[in-house]
Length: 87
Image 1 (cartoon, rainbow, N blue to C red):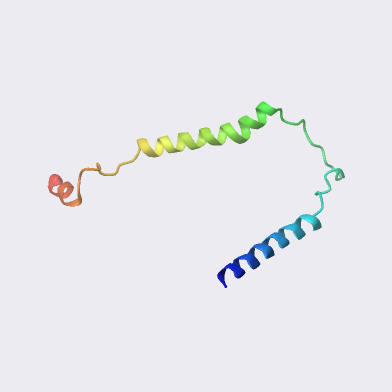
Image 2: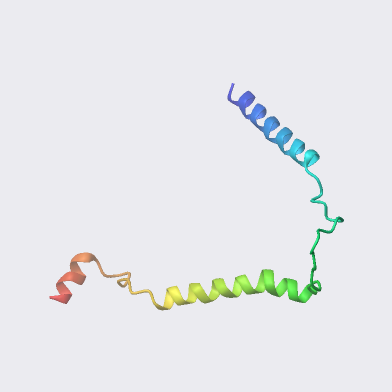
């Protein structure tokens, strides 16, 4: 019975996805809007830098700041040891 429900759910999801793809238009990409004035396109290097390297760099910077500024207790210390050491 469980296999039948999974198959039914998969068929429903696939059918819904297929219908959405068939019914959606290609966003009218060839039709220009009034007042539309696009700039120059990005080169491959600019696109990769903007959408791949920049997010990875930001992630590394943020992760590095979190690790450097972490003020948690050392791994070996327990709560009773650290509280008695402070007193």
